Length: 325
Image 1 (cartoon, rainbow, N blue to C red):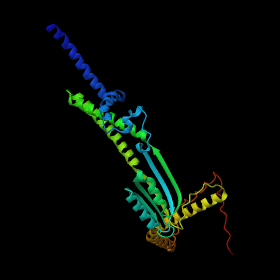
Image 2: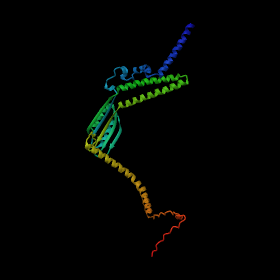
Image 3: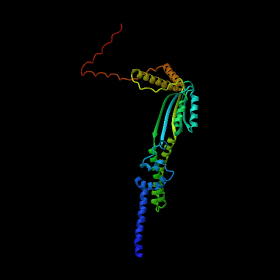
Image 4: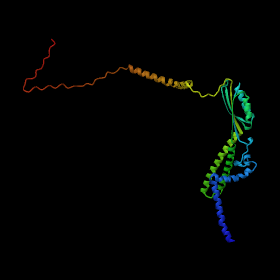
């Protein structure tokens, strides 16, 4: 019996070491390694009553539920309605969104006369989307309507699976952190746990954003007065089009130049006028001052030396000057 026990103890020790190594590898390995553990951990969750209908039918690999009420769809719409009173129509549009269980996300208005324009961005529940659109169209004369849908069912299911897998990875890292026996292992596992928790928080934020977009649809309604004109500009080419564009640019440039001149003019009056007066006075004073005559330097030239008399001859006669008489 003692021989058998001595043989079994090394085998048990090796098995424990292998299990620990497998746990460490699953905690710091790739996503493909942990996906299996996450699927095993998520199995009971899928079997429960809180699982999504698509997941109960086999997860992402099986056929999903094709019923409209079980799909995640994002509805967006835009309306342009011509009304007699823009302010009153805007109040009615806001009240319509509030009654449906939504709210006004943004409100932009221009002018208050017959050419007034108001643009409201409404958020309403998805199941009340079409009803709200019809009520908004009845505010006046509908000029334009555009409705778009985006099916994000597969993306939502994929996010759910990734969140479940990431939660399992976080729990695995926490369990390994509790069993850490050295400082180096503790630091490594803390860094890994922080990274996994950050990834989990990012996935959960994406899921919340997607849930918000599918739960509350966006409707943009533009209310225009009787004289308002917000028709879309068509792409035109030609000489007259270029001339109109150049004239608009010229007027805009002149407006900018006049604005700059108006901003600089007070400084010119305050600083430029005194400086100009001082310059004029200085110049006038400079003209009145007499100009000094330059004095030529006195240069003394020595008298010419007399020529020496010729040797052995009579002196050179001196010419007589003629008298004035």
